Image (cartoon, rainbow, N blue to C red; front, top):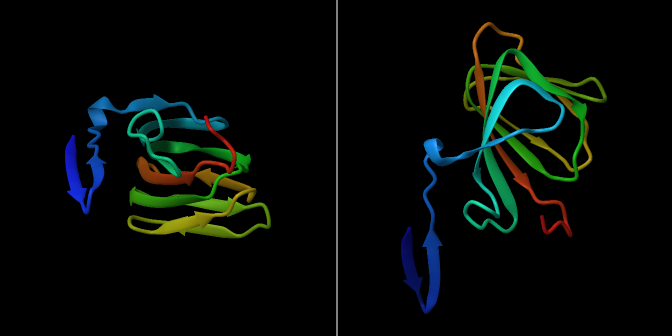
Length: 129
């Protein structure tokens, strides 16, 4: 942990190594594993959480929504994200996608290689969990 003071305000940086991250079992996901890197429990984030998600070939997430804003950043491989309205987004390494609160989406890895996505998501307003 690092402590930095700037004009009397104390900031605390917190490093999380992948080996120390806990597995996150996301609802309605399949052929997939995710690790929570930053959240209220791990590093005390107040407005968002961050997870590193690995989708095996054929892996994905069912059509569903949440009350959170999300950004998906593909760090390796390719995934396809489909909206309830029928829009399709093919995401490759360094591509990102914003998903609004309440917006339904379906995620699928249709390739023969694993895909990894960094997920950044807000906590729903009024949710203290």
